[in-house]
Length: 468
Image (tube, rainbow, N blue to C red; front, side, top):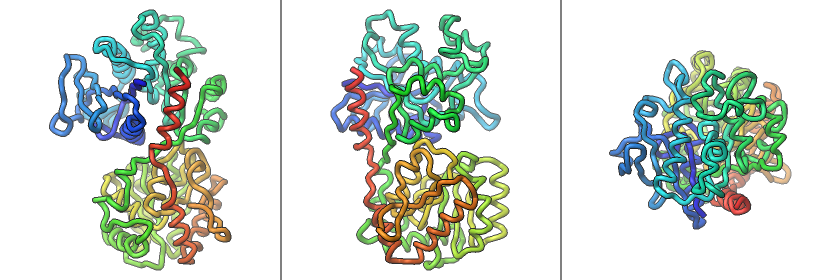
């Protein structure tokens, strides 16, 4: 079976978020199952030949490799992709993003034929590649080369839909009559993701619960009706974790490597090093809560700020790493300055510090108001760091409430999105932390979780086969 991934970002070539992680790890897992996988990606400025050896095929496409065998085809066009950012710069999104990504979609399809690639399934990701299912049926459908190709569209975050002004529609090169409420039209504008959902043979999301949530008014971001109309073709498959990158036994970025067999002392050493790095006093008896992520409303930073005062009055420490909205940065800075022995913040994002927080924290806070899948809670569990999360999306699919009586579970979930409910769960976590025997059992439960990509890849493999 020949699978082609089409994505606007793929790790380790370019990355702005979890989309890149998925598109860098899932193809490798599918390859381990015996599938032929290739990847199409724009040739961005950040893809450096000295880091990723490139072979120029022609003026439209170059190629490199992912792992040993996966061919990565890079669509060339300097005026679109030789820029500092993938989607925008400091002033906002690029105004020609519609043109940039329709070009990528159309060129990808043309290059398949030019290179005589055998394609059974094309796996598209988010709005940036949502035109591919449309083009296959509306522009390339009469060409026998493309006959029988099935399309899968993966929604990583429904909040990002690729919405553009109506007057830009001619750039798509499609019939005028396709701009209607049954395809592209969305409150007088173009909605690329909507069209992709309608035209794809299969729609997937990144967790089982999120697949159901997006069909509701609360989480549907205006597309709940469209998604409900395709409910039989929507399936939620939990994202996996790259267990080679995230492995406390081999992680070169943490102070002390450890496993489920020897974590008690070695994790404490990571904690001491983390406290030192953030200039917090060392105190083994009090828990360290970590937060790693975007400083945004979606990630629950508003809720976090509501409870930080009460947290600072408790016997704990908190470390925040992330970039985001200016208002959140100002308020977090103020909190840290008022509580220098309790709260530390760093407004940046670097992999090394993130690894150190996962390894050195006792608990991880993830109060996201919605979370399609979430990787941070999986990483935390892999490192024996206990997540405290809101019961939504992939968080609800991966975190099982800890029962101090049965000792079953791997974390803490709050069900009402209020400061009071969040703080209650934080205090419950502190109480369990105070019982070293119970907390040690909870950490061992966390280590037993398996979120490797191989499990998810097997589900995708069956989905692909059912489409053919």
